[in-house]
Image (cartoon, rainbow, N blue to C red):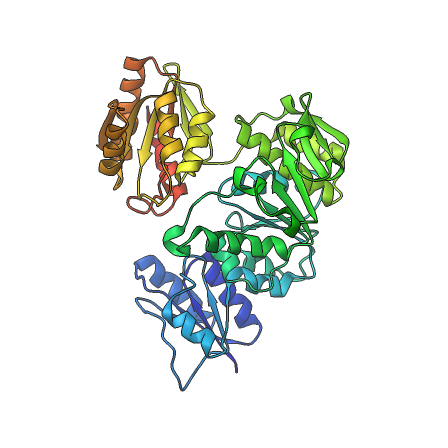
Length: 450
């Protein structure tokens, strides 16, 4: 019996294990963590004949090498043990690549980019659902990809996958019918080391895609070598004249209408999400839908009723005339700058968490332009306070926790005459929370208690 080792006991690792067990593999999962919850999962999987090793660092036994290793998205691809496995010729892949092997007879939409992935994926999924298509979203949103492969006789019309650079890096063959690149800015450099590496990882998915859709308003994507991208559909919120490439393959806004491939699709004002970045997301979703053959009427109907994405500029409540908005998904400087740009000034900003590498200049400029005060939480609070002092922005307070930030924000908003309190952290969440969703849910609950 062939052996498969899975690294990481998360949702994707469990789904991958069940797929391989069903296929007759002897399956082992290793995870460096331990908790009572993980122990309960260990016992559940043991009953299914899957071995789980907790508090365990994966190693290679020379006398019992696996034929397959599957890594979860959070596992670094350059771990010495994974490099050794690849050098030994062991088939080493990510969970989404495993799902592709099971589901490649179905057309995929692959969405990648630094920011905008989740909103664009959600828009595409909403359009496809309105069109009556069975097109589940997976990857970084919705299902783990291998969960879709566990369904008996899957009758999917499309698979819509939000795919991070981590997942692309561990996927050799994943080749979507339609590949979409939303934005490109420095992120995850602690993992990918250089911007060039990060770019090449993203580009590899697009190069394997049959059709490619690019955000033509992104300053980096606008300046790539166009001779390498000849089958590309470009979008622009700035009109037909701003398009790259052939206007017949363009999707753009002209006279307040969305135009796709020369055809009027919908008036922009029926789309309720705020911010230019969301109009860019809308154009990319429309491009994908039309390439997939979706009728105009389904696009119009879906976009007229689309409610937005949780944790991305999500309206929570109004307290004493002040709107509280959850933008917990803004985990880097660029996303947080977009969040600030999208709300009315003056704003009380709650920021901080586990800081990431990146250029904070544009974010700091936007704070000076729009924030009446900044309340700082988490590990990054002292670092951010220092950066704000350096630009002579002194209207900040270190409040440390979300509970204190929300309570204080209401008082400061009244003092400063601000109409908006915005959680847009510009940081990862792992110093105080298990995920950006956990952080956003805590913020939401605290706001509703006001």
